[in-house]
Length: 305
Image: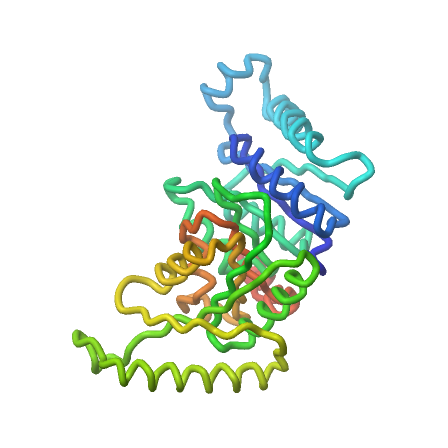
């Protein structure tokens, strides 16, 4: 994953861990990270009745931590050899979102990796919150992700963040021999609602967007980029249109750039990256961020707490 030297990975002691670790094993074969930090968050300080029945030897929170650490170590050892990247396992207590963000601030990874369970209550909300506040890039691994990287899908907004995501994708595709395609989703002007514009208007819109795409490539020095697919969002969400093209092109990964957020007010903006984080695509979603531009806001927010 090129400059992603330190990966921080959330594990929750469910079957999802095996898929996450398997996918990371696959990715590390492409470009092995130097450091892997695995973090497990214990939501409640008190030991639950269910855990007590499952592990009767638990007598205190320290006993619980020791057992969890042992279980996680067994899972990690199945996928990463001793001569591989440096591995560290951290166990914390508290709210999942706050604990993960605190860990990001403390450990400063280049990439945060989380499993994403389809239909799991609250999963989309957690993903959106983490995406908004995290200063590093994020990789959400879906339950049915496959261990391959042959086709990458890059939704863009003609922004600086999109240009960076395209450059990152270009490097990745060259290193693994993958193809990638580009998509821009647009909305018809409000005056057309609820009417469907004519084919003539659609042609004009495509011409306009093609010219905009060429200016975008020139502005950010983007060369050897595939033609962009322009998709009108007639109804629903932008993510629905992206999902449709992901299926039709059989993409293995979605890469999207996240804009820098330099103030708390910017967090209220509904960005493409935020919406893609909570959508269930069935393939991994990589949200690319420039760390230095995002880290200031995370620190300021945590300092206020």
